[in-house]
Length: 310
Image 1 (cartoon, rainbow, N blue to C red):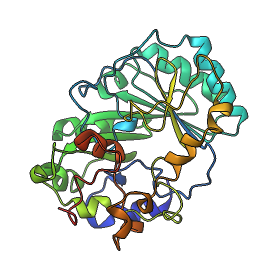
Image 2 (cartoon, one colour; image 1 turned 135 degrees about the vertical axis):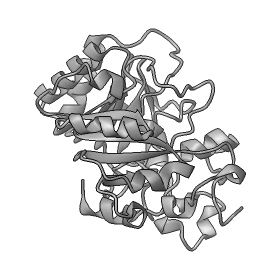
Image 3 (spheres, rainbow, N blue to C red; image 1 turned 45 degrees about the vertical axis):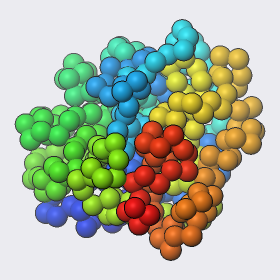
């Protein structure tokens, strides 16, 4: 990851020897956006994580976490998934994130196929319990998802082949996590759990919102250059924005979906386009999760977790 990611969270790290590259935001938020498809998040199956669509997913990086979703129809076949990956590779896609798998075998098969296609960065997110059953796959960057408990984090030390860890933590334990001194050398993405409303926040949300990206005035730091594909073939702007369907890959192609105005509308969803945020002097250094805001307010332009408005 770029050095800018680490500098963005340096104030939170304390004396931690963990390689924390992202706190409460996806690791790609600091990358300059180009207005073209760079990143695809493909969900494999309904998922078996502990956070469900019906009960709400309170995660700051739930987009790459293993959650549980409701499928509206039969999941895509292996052949359909492979066709999507072939198209993505031909379009020059740079990053593939594979999440929410139902079986370890499926995750390993799809990730291996993506590497064969020449996709530069292939990430496979697996629950820690499943990582214990897996073996390294050349070219695949495995990321273990783990809930924050000291013993859980210590377990990561034995997996020297892991690229990283997605650590889900409650706000009250954030400082403790960031101060840990363990022998895990992989990247760490800190996935902070948000309460249902601002009134119950137990962490400094101002620090977590800070992001340094070169073109925040033009593009969303999180949504831009990214599309998500559900296990049943629908294209979304984000895996957690389940109600905003941009297209259907069972009947169409990625290239055609990218031409739709709705895609650009999400990629350019900057603070200038969010009513309350547009007048804020901190809008170009502020990252927030539109999916979390929508979950809390039912409004894509919600500002439930903004300490300034509150």
